[in-house]
Length: 166
Image (cartoon, rainbow, N blue to C red; front, side, top):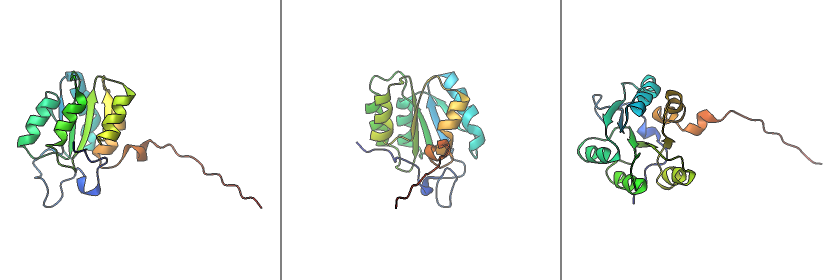
């Protein structure tokens, strides 16, 4: 099993660079099974992308089939909802997706162990449980779509206090 890249690097910015994917190729493609997730992804991400996210009907199986035939987008969102073995399907996806593609996953389960295995074990950028909202998508997927990391934007700050003895 080949893990996904854990975080996008400078090379994997969604902006089309010289010698990379065509400017006509979508920067982000999503494969979702329901209209509510479709709407949340469009509403939450379109302002962050150089062109609208391309949303296709279908889940992870459709994503695997499509990525075998087409150039990989910079950001790929896949729906594992309804899958009996989402980890196995994500492992299959990892075989057809380039390492610099930022993979984001949505699904039905809010199980913490599944979240950890998907994000830490497989190296997926982020996992969100349905039902999705515009704000949820913008907050958690947005930083990754822009080429950063979610931690950088979700840290609210703090203060370092030092004490010297002597």
